[in-house]
Image (spheres, rainbow, N blue to C red):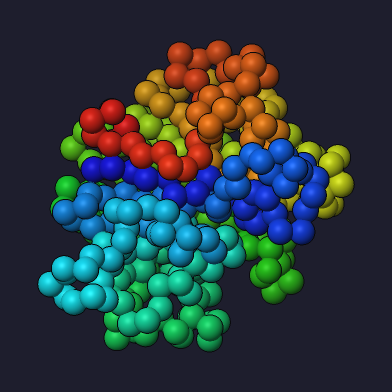
Amino acid sequence: MELIVLGAAAGGGLPQWNCAGGQSHYVWNDNRPAQTQASVAVGRPELGYVVINASPDLRQQIIQTPTLHPRSNHQDGVRNSPIQAVIVTNADVDNIAGLLNLREKQAFDIYGPTKVLEILNENSIFAVLDPEFVRQHPLETQETISPLPGLDIELFTVAGKAPLYLEDRLGIESGDLGFTSGIEIRTETGKTLVISSCAAIDQPLLERIQTADHLLFDGTVFEDDEMPKLGLGSKTGRRMGHLPISGSDGPLARLAECPLQTKRFFHINNSNPIWGALVEFRAWESTLRAHDKSPSRFYAIGPPDIYTDANGVL
C-alpha cells in the first residue's frame, strides 16, 4: 500500500485568502510554496484509493496527483476514478466540503461517524451526491472496514468538539458527541494512525499510539494562543478543539517516549511557525528538535509526500 499526503494545511490553507500575516505573509511575499488543506489517500494503483477527509482543495489535489487521475482506457469508459471511497473523520468544513467536487454521478462509498453523516444529510447541498451512485455507511466507534483488499481501517473516537458552525445549535461545551474521530490503517506490514483533529491525548489514545508503527497527528497550532498574538483572530487552539503542539500536555511531550517508527504533523494552521521551519517541507528547525528528544522525532510533512511499503511507512 501507499499513503499519499494530498495536503497538510489546516482550514483555509496556506496562504489563507484574506490573510497577510502569520505564515501566509511569507507565501505572498517570499515565494514560499502554497499548501492545500489536509487530506490523505491510501491504496494502490491497481486497487484504487480511499481518501481520508475531503478537503475543499480536493479537485486541485487530484489534479496534482497522477495516480488519482481518471483513465482514458478504462473499462467503464471515459468517466471513471481510482477513488473508491471517502472517510470523513468529523464534520468540519475542511473535511467535508471537498465532497462537492465528487459529484457528477460517479460511484463511490462514504464512511463516517453516524452524527457526521446526519449532518451531511441535513444539508441539502450534499444532495448533489446522487444516492444511486454514492453510498453512505455509518460507522460505529472501533468498527473495522476493509474498503480495499489488504487494507483494514478502524474508526476510533478522540477528544474533540462540535464543528464551529454548529456551536449555536449544540453548544460549545458539547464535548465529543461522536463528532471527532481518528483513523487506524492496518496492512500486512504495519499500523498507521491518522489523527487530524485532537483536543487532548487521553490514556486510551496514548495506549493506541504506543502500539502503532506510524503516526500522522494534528499539528494545527504550536502554541495555544498564537492566533491572538499574531492578530489573526480571537480563538485559541483549544477553543477550536486542537491541542497545541507545545506544552506539557502537547504531543511533543506526551508522545516523546512512544516507540513509533515515524511521527509526523499535518493539518498545520497558517499561524503555526513550523511552516517557516521547513526546507521543501521535510525537516524541523532547531526549535522543534530541542523539544523532541525521542528516538523517532516528530517531523512536519507537506505534499507531495508518498509513503509506501518499500520505505517502511505502510
